[in-house]
Image (cartoon, rainbow, N blue to C red):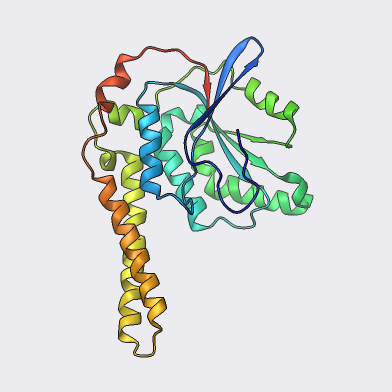
Length: 247
């Protein structure tokens, strides 16, 4: 899998890499991240839905967070919110919250930041059974993390259950969470447009930029309500594959 090292995500599609660990065929699934510069969140959620509708059951969901991040921004909070709503509280035992890039901070800094995560942003997930780990960047340590979830029973995510029951994408817990955030953004840009419109000295470029952002958010909301996801609801319950899959 290609790994992004800059500010932009390199994952635009769902990629699967297969490896062998302790006699198991392990499928590592890499999905696009939310808040991508080149993809709308609604498109990313739909890509994830289209993959999960194949009936795969996941043994582990790995969420990577760089400990070098000094604060949790809006995008990070939205990612965590979507993770909770994709997985469901009853499946949190299959989630690993993994911190990375420990070599980029001092011991004191890392201790403070990890404490912030555990006492605030990750607290609900940890209380519901999510595991905490740290990755040192080596192949050996990556193998250790995979080994730790090899014998975990695969689960059907809340998102999959909701789709199987006939929920439209916008009706799922993840869809509702995303729509709520998009509505907040739309209100923000609407306010900004009114401010710029009322300000006679406002630069036209700023007005047009705010208008474009408002319209982009509106487009994402529209996409959430587009039709049914093809054959998604019925197919998840039909498949009985017992793959050992790792996200």
